[in-house]
Picture 1 (spheres, rainbow, N blue to C red):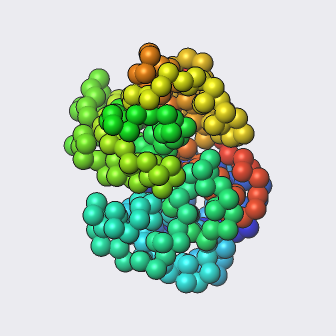
Picture 2 (picture 1 turned 90 degrees about the vertical axis):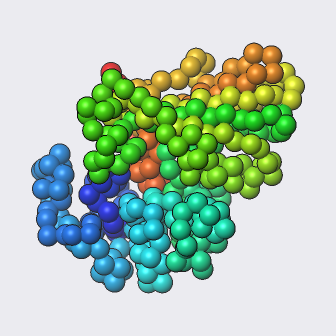
Length: 334
């Protein structure tokens, strides 16, 4: 199947190209960004000798002529208008932005007025472990970001056992690539090297997304308190979830049963690390309790499981291919 990549300039666009170059079912037929007029090898010198294609100025009509599915690695607010055009032209869409991840009211409360109200209600949230059946018939997938992916995969198995009267705290740490390719004050080497800091505590826009999915999947209204941190590593994400259980249950067995048939969730018997998942689509999870105090630890590659490789998994399921087709599984370790 011919596929397009729109938004090829950023880190997630590059990761999509790297995965799809060797994919046995998908063929890259169109690559675009906002400016065009460059070869993909010059845009990303690491691809020299691997792919020789022009980078076009993104145009929905041109995409529809050469591709059946498009990956949108575009910023939120920008992605929705392009997705709307593509869907009207019969092109399936996997959107890596936040534009279709939330229900309409929640989106407009935390982002901006939505320009594609018709399609937002039909978008499938692309967390395969919980939405695989819906993904099989989807034309539009809202690919989750890194923080909600790592947080939800850790938290969801235990929602039925957590005390609803106690708050949940999520401490999340991301590599610098999670802040995107565009340089800003906090991502400059002189600031982030040998440094770390929390940002937007209790105000980050992924907090309502996590709460919404817990409500939709488990019908539970929890107080979820989310605090992200930027750490001085290139890629990787480490999430620690703290909650209170209603009873002293066997949390290890609950976790094992929840993901026994999941290809890309690995249950660990000790606290997780980011190196073991870096370069892969795996989410590693560890759980422990001290009486009724619950600790859940998860790690992912923020650019892959938190973006590009998860997007390809979703596309595989949408198109009837094997879930793990072409998906990276070997970690960048050491």
